[in-house]
Length: 398
Image 1 (cartoon, rainbow, N blue to C red):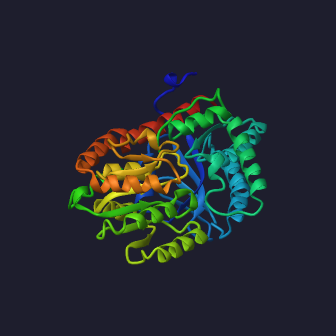
Image 2 (image 1 turned 135 degrees about the vertical axis):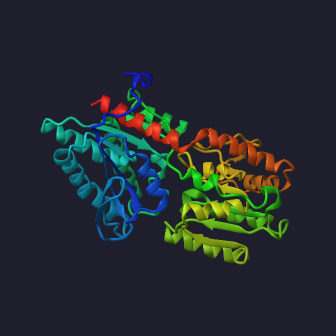
Image 3 (image 1 turned 90 degrees about the vertical axis):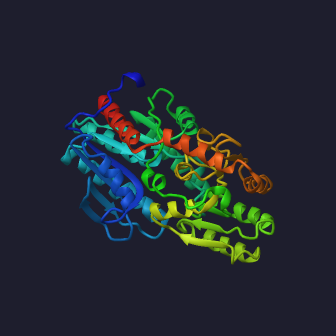
């Protein structure tokens, strides 16, 4: 079956389960609630196996039935919990609750889906497995935090990803680079490409008080991990700080890697930027939209990405973006037209892009062109339609 012949909507009696390492609150936060409410009507029932925000497991219904595993404080323990309890729970949902489509939210969870798919077949139950890829899983596996025995860790995780992809019926990359990577592992498996969920309305509806050209502040949004290159941003900002005495930097995101976050604070102090660099922490998307609406530009100097939704969020707000030319980012930014693309891990290049951002006489035009592109590229309606097609395609491949 070719991509063009997939049906557009899933069977009305379809039961599907998503499995991934996202952490959900009870009740869902506003952004997650919008996403899962959007899926109502796509089949008969939806289940989610993921993590709670703390160490207490949870089960509740809110647009889907959520089974949330305890988010233990050590990453290896979380992986062990997901690969053991998560797999058993997923198998129970298949055998006892009639789940017939599994959506694994990375190739690593795809290995769990593959185990369940093969086990269910022994009971005469046929299940389809759709595997998503939100980034460069070959590289990203070690870019969040330092781990013991990194060579063994990488080997095991890549073996799990390879196993999951080998048994997938359908793949869903978020970018052209993710698509190419998946094709190397599973060249004959059909793919449906679309970006990850974002609360587009929060960024569309937040009104800028001033245009970007009248603002001086820079915004970073994302987890504080080495892969995001925040240390490069701090070094580059230190180089231009005297040229832009009113400029501030707002680092919006969770301290996902405590060691790295502490190093960033020490770097800020060492560079004499403690009064100009602000560690905001994680905030709701509506609040993030407010920071963007007061900024001159978003900076995302990542070493690797999938298709970073924060870039689309900034563009929806009319905020120009400086981003690394990695992974899926060139899919959405045209250099020197809708934003600036730079090589990753290059302080000199970022300094040059920051100077261009402050000197650009057409900065507001750049923001407007970026906004026009982003509104055509992503909408809640298109996201729901793509998800429906993903479920329908997977169901037809069982």
